[in-house]
Image (tube, rainbow, N blue to C red; front, top):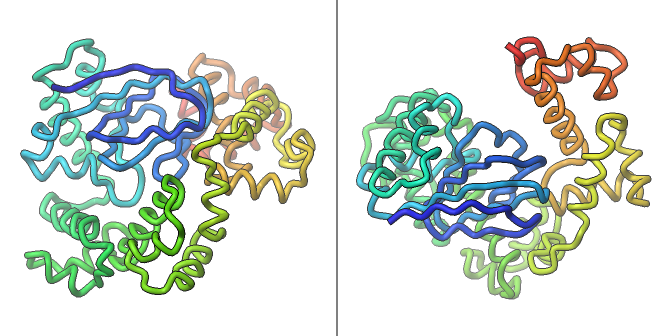
Length: 346
């Protein structure tokens, strides 16, 4: 039986995913974080997360619906992997483009129809076709993903991985062509992500984590981690602040929400927080895995979308958001959204 719950999630709290789950964000501002990556483009999307992932919300005004699926519904078809085992970015479908999906999630009772929700979501994902591949190519790509998920702690190499896949395709070339990343980098990204989880969410010592993740030399693991993350494992654990959840995240988001319409400069927010720009930028990066500039831009874009959707004049929106020239606002909006303010209104 599927379960549906609607909550107001706590800011900066880690919500672990224990079942295959659709996350439907009904309201909210700011970023979400999934598996140490921050996303500010979650609007109008239905997000699919698999077991062992986590999600947290970087402001306190989110309203979220979690829909958990029983295992037996899901993997009757390998096509379902495209929803829950996304490789490069957050797994999602464009919710507004999928009328059938909206019909299902707007019902209060799902029951036996949950399998149908998975079916229509899968069809929507294939229709979006984010990697411009056919279904046979997708199956090879996701075969690679599953081998990595199962074998990454055994220090699997590219050749042994390819030997595990029964295909006439050149899997290495296919992955590089469609995803823009090598199989070796996919393996490294998986190892790094799982290492981060152990460091952030357990009390294991770093040496123990290094051995469990397949590294025989803890010193090498420390160097590799710092080269990739910019922090030592111990610094990363302290900055992630899983248990204490200090008020820094809420403080900086509140400031940006209050002042983003008048103040776009990093220095303004650094002064308000009584630190240097460099210190504030580093703390935002370490704690929120995004940049201070991106937080400000995201809030400006959010306000612009609201005003434009209410049919406000582009010129008025530009001035209301602190732009001295309408052309500067239009360029800013198009660079971030991919279309002009006028096109967005339409």
